[in-house]
Length: 190
Image (cartoon, rainbow, N blue to C red; front, side):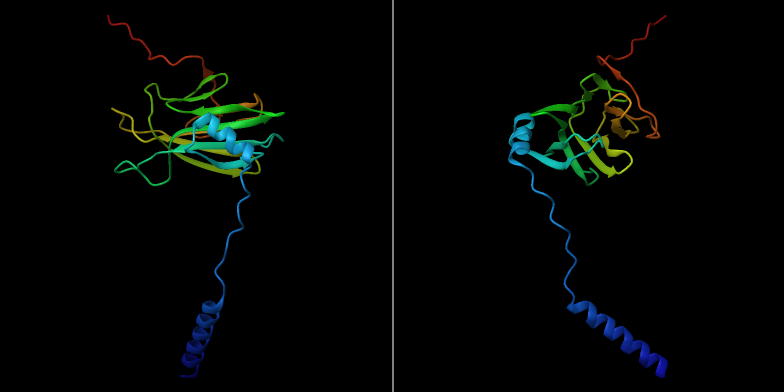
């Protein structure tokens, strides 16, 4: 009986101790500079939003991920960061330049990224993560692809060997090259 009473008192004390404590608060995110807000507005318009910024690629250069959120969540869409467009910009001296663009396709300054769908994509689900080893990793999933039974997620990371963002293979391990134009493969009928 004493052990049951002691356990009940211990539970009650733990409960009371938890009630009086202040809720955990996350540290405030650093403010986005006016210059970066102006860059975002110039590239993607007044509805643009800076999601993350800093040395995203681990190159010593300042970069920022800027998006246009989807105005309305489509029925049946998986929750998350739903976008119509995104840009990663990089500061080059006093100027900002595009390092990656996502609109209807995924592109970098050298062309269309490998694994980019041939058909235009009007909405994407974007996930992102940062690690000390690889920097910013982006995962783009088209919200819909007519006629597709499986909608693939396209991974994108900074490739330090070629010094630009490139897409990754299905296992998110090997970098894929770019192509200058998107063309549907042609087949000759016999």
